[in-house]
Every structure is written in structure tokens, then in C-alpha cells.
Image 1 (cartoon, rainbow, N blue to C red):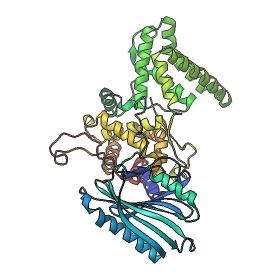
Image 2: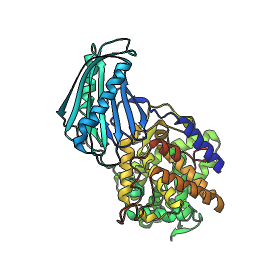
Image 3: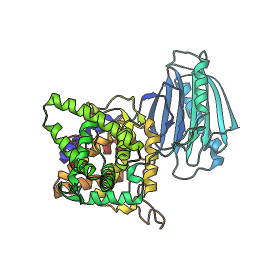
Image 4: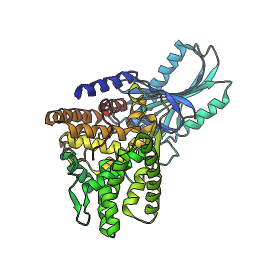
Length: 495
């Protein structure tokens, strides 16, 4: 089992060995470290490369036109009075590079004010005209703008051919959206909390119920265990058969939170039903599932299509009538098609399986969060250290940061339902020694991602919730660690 995990991790590490991220960008861009955000010109390419241990350059380009953002991070708060020295160093370094690779025709440096959100209010600006060898001597114009944030020094370099004012205007429009030390471009509203909030973080009690399931190694109750007395009684197998039928008809795997919600709604509806309704709830879904699975392939496909149409209509009309279990299932199906992000990047090797799609849905988001919580509890960490507030913050960061994530991470998140289902099945079927090994891997992964156990030493003696270190972690590492369970996973839950 662990050999397979290692091979998958190595495969993704190879994919991500190039630190540049390059993809068509037509949405808001948020730097993975949260150092800046803007809305780049539609259709331009973005590439992000390290300059040093604490520096990055992000380039938005189309042809020879470019908007480049250089970021240097500081461990301490910056002295805002150091703008001239720091900004001057950045500008002169770029001017020297221009001179070495072409010719600087004119330059003019001055200190000015700026309304860029997150900046100190002052800026150092250098207007420049130049030619470059890469541009075959074409005359280009632009400017550099150096600003200081609380902990970052930023240089925005703007350039376009002098004969292409349209491209320059596009860059200027993008510059008006620049915000420093933010994940939201200037003028854009922060992403609102998704409604409904992910099931796994809707309440503290939901988290604790999930923790109990994880601590029990996801062992399922006997199918004949009675959930509610009656004639016939409602059993665990009644709900499990329904979940299996939904999975077969709609090609979805319910998360633990969704299954538990379905179980509770079944109990509520069964208690209110008349004798005929009780019989349907307790036995009808199981019989239908048995008939479908016993049919030949051609008949099975026809039966699944018919049942899917009937169930979808029943869920929709039942939800409109306020029936609890119908509301739960209607939401579960709809959020599989509610997109919160989509990748246009080329599939990494691990995602070439036809089951991998490019859409990051609301359901994938919830599966991602529940998977992280599963890893936390399975690795032996205190479930109560994870609060609903911190998980909700991670949820927001996943949504806002998705467009800027590397392709590997984008495809992991877009297929979190299948990956998480595979991890659960591996854990459930593992023996004690294998679970111990998996738990150790989970702990290492969580630490690498920044989902660490808070300590008094690190928090100045104050109580602190877990997961608060995630922001600013390397998303390449995040992708590499999230995908370790892909190879060999069954992609099938076992209710």
C-alpha cells in the first residue's frame, strides 16, 4: 500500500519540478502567498518563478507586452521610510538588466503618492523607454512602480511596444486592480461564504460527529442494525442501500457528513410516514438496488437512466415541499454541478484517468475539507483543536486561491470526491500496522502543509486553534501531499 503512495507522490513531484506556473488567465489572480492580488488582462499568460528564498516574480504577458510583479518578503515589519532605498535598489537592478540586454533610451525617477490598497501611500516611479534584444530592437515604453506593504516590497513593471497603445491600456486597467498583501483585487468584493457552508464545518457538533466516525476507523454498522423500530423496521441497510443507489444512478459518492445527514433525514421521515410509506423507506430502495444490479448490462443501463430521472424529479419536488431527506439529496446532487472554479491547465500525468475532470465543484470543496479533517483525526490529533471558524477560513482560501494554484493542485481539488473516497476505503480495509503507517504519513503531510498542532511556545502562551498556519504555504507542496493516495485507490465508498 505505502509503495503505491510513494510512487504517486514521486510522480507528482516530477510534474511540479518546474517552479513556473503557466496557464491562460482570465480571472482574478491572487498570489499563493497572499502577497498581492489583481485582475490581469483577459487571455494573458501568467508565470510565477522564484527569485530567491524570499522573493518571487509573477509575469502576465501577451507577445512582448508585460506586467511583472516582483515581491520580496521580510520576516519583520518594514520601515516605511525605507521606500527610497528599497525601491531605488529594485528599480536600478531592473534598469541595469535592461541595459545589459538592450538599450535604455530614457528614464525618469520620482517619488509620488499611490492609492494602491495595502501600500504605504508613497511610491517610487520610474518612467522608461527602451529596446531589447528579445524584441528585435522594437521601441518599448513603460514604467516601474515600487511600493512597500507591511512585510513585502513590491515592484510592478509595466511595458508594451510604443506602437501598441491598446496593450498598454489593458495593463493600466489591470494595475488599477492591484492590491498589496491581499487575496482580493482592488475594487472587487471579497468572495462571500458559500451557501450552504460546507457540511463538515456547519457546526462544532458536526465536526465532533465526524471525529467519532474517523476514530472508529470508519467501520460500518451491520446492515440489519435497527435505526428505528417499526413494521418493517428502518435499518442501517435501508439507508446504505439508498446511498448506493444514488451513487449508481448519479455517479456520486457521499461524504461522511452527507451520509450522516441522509441517515438523520431518513429517521425523521420514517417516523412521520404511514405504514405504506414506512415499507417503501425501509425496503423499497434495497429491492430496487438489488433488481438493478442483478440485470444484464443493457437492461441495467436503461433501468439506471429511468430511476435517475424519477429520483431527480422526486428529490426536486420533495425539496420544494419541505421534505427533509429530499432537501438533503437535492442539495447533494445540485452541488456536484455548482462550480466554484475550473482549470484550463493541461492535465498532469496522474490525472490522465478519464475519471478526472477539470471542474472544482461545491461538492469537491466539501470533500477537500472533510478529507483534511479525516487526515487530522486519523493521525491521532485532537479533533477539538480544529474549529469551524478556521476550517471556514481554509474553505475561503481554497476558493479564492484556486485560479492561481499549480495544475497539479487544481486537478487534485477538482477531483477531491474520488480521492477522498479512495482514502476512506484504504483506511477502512487496512490492518492496524498499515493504519499506523498511514497515520504517520498523514501527520507528516499535515505538518508540511501548515496544518500544525498549536503550542503555547508558538502562540505566546495564548490558546490558538489548529490549521491557522495554512495560509502562505507552498501550494506545490500542497498538491504533492494531497495526491499521495491516488494510485491504487478504489474510488468507492463502502457504506
